[in-house]
Length: 236
Ligand SMILES: Nc1ncnc2c1ncn2[C@@H]1O[C@H](COP(=O)(O)OP(=O)(O)OP(=O)(O)O)[C@@H](O)[C@H]1O
Image 1 (cartoon, helix red, strand yellow):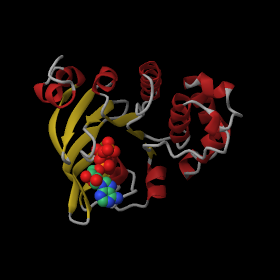
Image 2 (tube, rainbow, N blue to C red):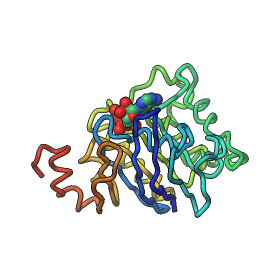
Image 3 (tube, protein in one colour):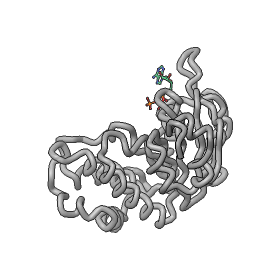
């Protein structure tokens, strides 16, 4: 289980994440819905050890992670697919994937994990020698997810994976993410794209100005008035 307990992130005086508590179980897809500036990226970066936690804690299988450097978190089983993807775009698909396999927990099983990535994303298998810069946005997002999978995470964090992608590509990406979850990995996804993310999630939370203001199953949130008003223009 991945647990965030009253997680708080500050930038100087600015409170970006204000006491967020949530859980993700192994094999569960949890989405955090929030508008621009709600604190979604800051929350994920704090879990991944890329910004400091001001208060609260992150626990993985009851082990306290907050305060650990990012490389130790990766070896504990946390992988982040950042907004903007963070790929080395002059390198090939395969080279980018290999970069994900640096934590000690991932070493020795690179070939097996890469085969799993290529099974979930056959397009990447066809294009394993292609320079990432020359690929479409959707393909690059697949590489970013594949690279995170190469670290053999227990929990995968995704920062707005649908951003800038055409609806059909987003649909394919979420179907692939469902297959990642089927391998037992828990997914924590932050999104503004309410419909598609709730369609593929088990549960969700609503994040507004750094605070959790709603929670429920994906079905409950789809018809929740607060979600409707915040994101869907009041119509179901
Ligand atoms: N490095 C930083 N220094 C100062 N303030 C920051 C920093 N990063 C984020 N913030 C502020 O913290 C708040 C939350 O930002 P964050 O990027 O976490 O939100 P978000 O929900 O991911 O938004 P977006 O969807 O636009 O990326 C915003 O008010 C933002 O301006």
